[in-house]
Length: 278
Image 1 (spheres, rainbow, N blue to C red):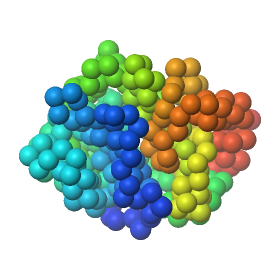
Image 2 (tube, rainbow, N blue to C red):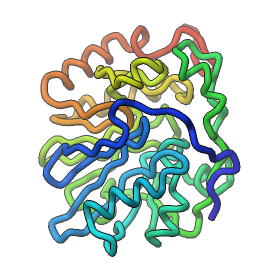
Image 3 (tube, rainbow, N blue to C red):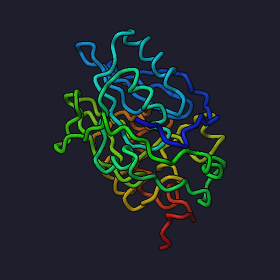
């Protein structure tokens, strides 16, 4: 196994870094610098981790998990929303510690088996400071082929009855979200988020607003729009985004409606490598 060749600590933070919060009695999310990872606990005490955080954060994530679940209770699996650096940054060290399987959509496998690198972040895209410095972010593939498995084609989520995965491409080819119909809880990955991720000021303060995916890594804006529409059609009650603070109720539904209605103005940058001119 190998973490990406360009894997390195990224000096980015937010006011919520290091905070663990409850979205449901059995679902907690933890902000690792600027990205959220999710702990889902089962009635028997077993648990599953969604995503693997920022580079060089394995000890931090392990410490949080051990405080919640105990030192001898590894997860049944790590399930990835997608393979961008801030969602798999500590995956190899976590696998070595826990010896657990990893699941992802088959379209993400090339980026998780060393076969293919993501496109380099688009520093030319319209956006704030974090977009301009995005060339610093790792984009080379990792290789975890020994433990990598595909999500089941029937939409079920391994080890998590009652949850379903939903393919939401655009930000990455095989990005998935996770939805539990019972309580309308959505883990949205980066399909839509609740902080404007290219703005250093808004990321630092975690200014809460429904936003489209991070502009510097989104390569297909038409697919991204269809993905947000697909998620908005669900009976959503609460969302845990890949970036930002969890959001519920009317604030969530109204924010999504505004984003969809004004997609090109609010989400799609005016210019950039992957922006198609109308």
